[in-house]
Length: 312
DNA sequence: ACCCAGGCGGGCG
DNA sequence: CGCCCGCATGGG
Image (tube, rainbow, N blue to C red; front, side, top):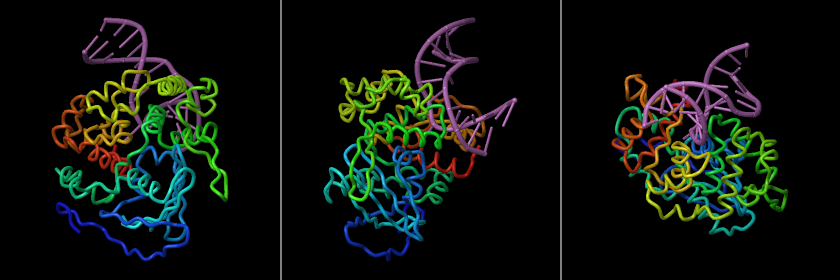
């Protein structure tokens, strides 16, 4: 398989299917490791274990839990899954397909973002990295927490919130907590939210949760165009330009959104502007002109590559 | 001790 | 408008 000059890495898929687990075969290879290690909502709270050459990942949603296993390392096209809570084999498959964008036409994505050597090199290094499509409330909460923070701490805070406020569910062999909804968090006090390590963001979380519980229409955003949705999301404390773009990209699959954080800004100034300082606005204009409706995908590769390569 | 982290809101000129 | 500063917290 070859897309736009980039050779796909393939790996032998010879691990056995076993009882109680279902199988998904994808058209295009998916790099689970990169997808789960690139600062996306799922990456903030999923649990990862490695057992020999097989990786195990579990994650919770608002309605149940999913377990995945796959061959660790290179991108693969076969995933095994197991489900708990309010899922059936088919709804769980749907959740996983949607979550990891397994139905996305990656040939089309790569064709549209492979504009230059920087992106091509990022794609080669992290081939199969997907922009995940998470739940709107989950995405909102994760990225409100992300501001002026680092990924390690974000993970800890999201985990604390799940442990403190997530509804309990029995998976059969253990108890786990699902992702907490807005209504539950809206009832917590700012002081309680602070004990989860949220710091000055506690008031933003409280306000956001209350608004979502009282009618701020996260579902309605699905039918808005990019500009309309962005201003709607920014129309409340705690969500600015960058966080709004993250919510749109990873919570609503709006690939024209282009989140600009310190890593993206720094690395783009270096790679595309000869190390000159640029405004957020200038970078948005550049990204929109170069990658258009696929800008968010380009951003995810640039971001992940910058972090992994330590580009400063 | 000092610097930074997937930024944002508010205040000032 | 644009610019600049403070902000909770923990890890390097």
